[in-house]
Length: 436
Image (cartoon, rainbow, N blue to C red):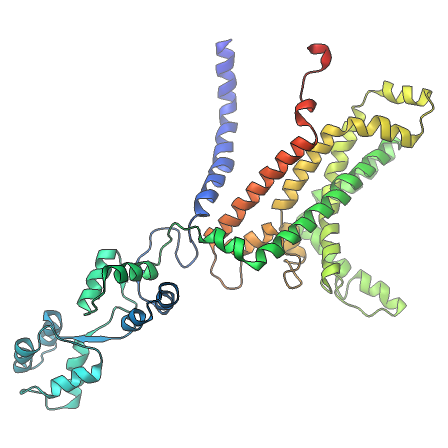
């Protein structure tokens, strides 16, 4: 017995490894990334500290340190051993260097004009304006666009540039100039406060509910019941035809719909005969876009539901149908009292599975409308893809996209629990009364 159990675990091990690598690990990483500000600009590894126009703007707007930001953005002119060493390497006059070291060592000048005024007042001042500007240039200090690997290096750079800050200001500068990712809750605050979130949620609810109710369950069940009462040969052909949308490559499938809806497509060519001007029927209006999005996805979803429901109906004992016919039941009465009660478990499966599938799939919407016109068909999964992996700005926001994906996972789990409760899952999987 123990050897059989061990063999079973060994046989299951590849599947368990695949589940961990391709399901658990991505979900865990998504949860981790959602609490960061990872993006194209920060990268996915550690960053550095660099004063840029964006960081100065952030220092002014987020931390209220506009004066510090202005100071960091300016060049300062410092007389210290480093600048004197530069002057020596530049072969400046030794008397000028000696006088600077004796009378002005440690001084800082806010502007180049002030530094050059000091140089002109030296006893051994240079004779030409060009030489004065060369000396002031060697005294220049600026930390703009200088990359510092650590906070300590940044603090040392500020000190060398003659910028004296309080510990609180230094911390704020470090936070504002850091180019790497940090742990943050800003992604969720941004999602809960953004008006776009409500719009995308409403779009997702419209898309999932209408497609699920009209096509993935209701129409799929109609197809299954209709083919059940058909002769086997034509029923098989009919089911095969309805499977074509599912087995077709998504690009080819959507291109066929676009050929139907383009301004030079079948609909426009046909309706021109009745005086209707040609137009792009898919993207002409929000209503048209939603109709095509639901039809495109609905035909694919209905084919799967048809197969599941057809198999479930065939599994119903024939004696129940014979008995109903003996009792004089009509087709509608057979459907209502024999077929539908037996489809409770398949309906739960199709409803749960297709809800999760519709919530997470976006490929057909991306290929057909790409969320248009004007983002009116942008659903949550498509918005997540645009945020994290494809947008016109070029700055992919991995952290924000991961937060959106994590919310999608939570919504899926929540809806699954509701379905299990609504369909009384515990009763469905309980042992038959005869076994108690």
